Length: 158
Image (cartoon, helix red, strand yellow):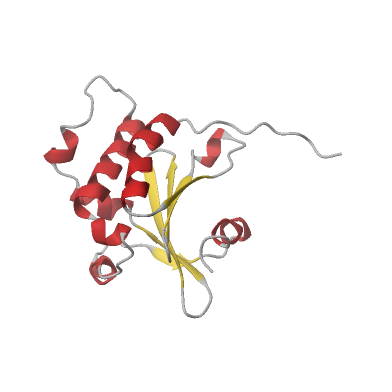
């Protein structure tokens, strides 16, 4: 018999609902919580667009991966958390509650505000930003090879 495992609530669900749900609605994206059986999975959730998926997870900081399905049929990801973080300004930082000492929670809020303020085209599915991303010395991207990652993407990127 299989072992019953209780799904854990995403630790940042309140922040996600307050900041990412409206972002998803504004840009016609789908907000998806990924199953989390273990806190080490990093509180993952997705923003799903027509032909891309943004995956957020929290470990030592907030990771953001931008997934696409390429013409060759392979899934591909770009790690864009640095790109988004570099766009953050005092405009976003001043909106964070000073009494919040959860750095990951604050980072999630900053990323949501920064995406909304500076990355509307990305959220609408435009890919012109990728050329600039490719010129950055710290860009990181690769084809997806892990089966569980492919299974995560398959329902959203056809």
